[in-house]
Image 1 (spheres, rainbow, N blue to C red):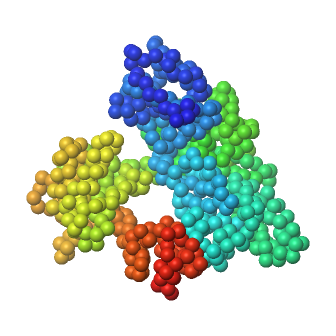
Image 2 (image 1 turned 90 degrees about the vertical axis):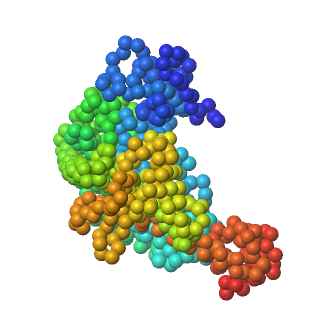
Image 3 (image 1 turned 90 degrees about the horizontal axis):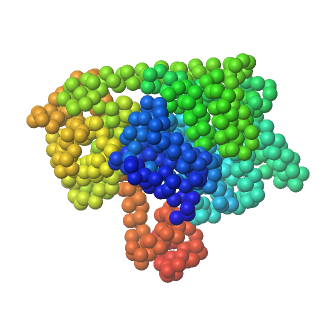
Amino acid sequence: MDFNKRALKYRLGKGFDITLVPKRPGVYIFMDEGARPIYVGKAKVLRNRLSSYLRKGTTHPPKTEVMLKRARYLDVIVTASEKEALILEAELIGELKPRYNIRLRDDKAYPFLRIGTGCPFPRLSLVRKRRRDGALYFGPYTSSTELRRILNLISSLFRPRTCTDSYMKNRSRPCLKYQVGKCSAPCAGRISEKQYQDTINRIRQFLNGKTAMVLKGLKKEMEEAALALNFERAAMLRDSIKAIEGVAEEQNVVSKRPLELDVIAIELRGACVQAAVLKVREGILRQKQAFGLKTGLEEDMGQIYFNFIRLFHANTEIPEEVVIPEVLSEKKASELSAILTGLKGKRVLVGKAKRGIRRRLFETARVNASQKLDYEISIMDRWSGLSLRLKRLFGLKTSPYRVEGVDISNTSGLESVGSLVCFKGGLPAKDCYRQYNIGISGPDDYAMIRHVVFRRIKRGLEAGDLPHLLIIDGGRGQLSAAIQSARELGALDSLDIISIAKDRKREGEKIYLPERPEPIFLDRGSEELRFCQRVRDEAHRFGVTRHRKRRTRKALTSVLSSIPGVGERRKALLLAHFGSVKAIASAPLEELKCVPGLPLKVAQAVYDFFR
């Protein structure tokens, strides 16, 4: 492994030698006794920064003292520069979710818009994890619905491709998206590589709020196309110009000057923190975002602002100015400005919301953050009461916060899938959803439940993230199977398990508890029953979706087995070459004959079969 990417693990204690830590920029990770990350930080000089933590006699804020007392191991990752260290720190905090770092709550669930690189015709896609793969990422967005709306708008305005590389590779004529004006059909050569790259550059400008630059470029290209008598392309560009101008007219103009600002407000009440970000580009309010935060070692609002801004802007486009209230000292503001300037490559001002347009925008952001915080607190209060009632009603060990549901989906024991959904504080935590392929033959529901619960609890014991309550879809038998797995792993004292059986013969939903031979029946309108039903139904929905995909895939691939001369080996050859049964079915005979290892007679049989 390259030295710049190598992690060096140290055991903290009397024998630890600080001189072994490199005097290089990088990221450091404090870990507890179980080697679980509890704090991630970045440093311009690793040895100097860590010395400030570990030097004897140094006093630290209370939260930092608690973190250092829990720390048993230390990892450092050397990077090429402080800028790279900052980006890596943000990625590790999102991935590892250390307890003592400020971070976006459930930040893995926040979607990004990804533009691939390294190929002539890059693809646009929605992803939920930002990787270091050289691609361009825009976000995070707080709503996948909003991001899909933006992606749909971009498809209508600029017509980039959104299909996978394998799908594009196996097409020779335009698909339906080209017909409805949402793709430029690079697969069929309907757009040149240069024109497509110009389109990608315009999409980048559009996402960064540079609408005027986009319109200027489109108008110039439209005039050139008209002069070249390419009236079809000129008409297409004209339609895009009108659509973009229509979008721009609908947006909220906040200044006649071409301001480029991110206005940030953070509200803190007890343990609840909410941040609101207003993105102003070319004097137009382009986007409002709200993020729930989990604070770490921060002791005051100034430090919360400082850490949120540097981590947030490590993953998103950086404006010319970031506007915040007067919570940072001049020294801290200059330090933050230097960090953002290094990331952007040009000067970034950290301004204060004192008066005028900046003050008005900050007040708008503050109201947004405050309203979202009120909503979050009301949800928390509601769950707090419901959680306590669940504990009393079911005799649980604790008032649950993390509740998970398990369900099995299969067809007569075939293509079996186990699904696991997770709720935190009464709300779905979709980044914690899991699906399990089950290799057990025959319709043995109990064995499948044992299998899934065993795998979940075993991983939870290793990672330290067991649920407080596990809800099984089924009756007494399914509950007993789940309890057996927990008992085998010695985890019965660490979590509670109940099951819920569907309403049969109109006698009501049944809740089975480990210590009661008979089920209990809850009032049909009770909030406790509705929550249990919600967890059960979500696990069922999640499992059925995956099961149907597996069943459909198997049904499609089994079609190939009906063709004379096509066995398992030739089926694999065809799928490897075309990518899907659909592509095989639509392939011309000439292309089928070109499949390596496929006899001409069999190629003709495949062609005839699908026609």
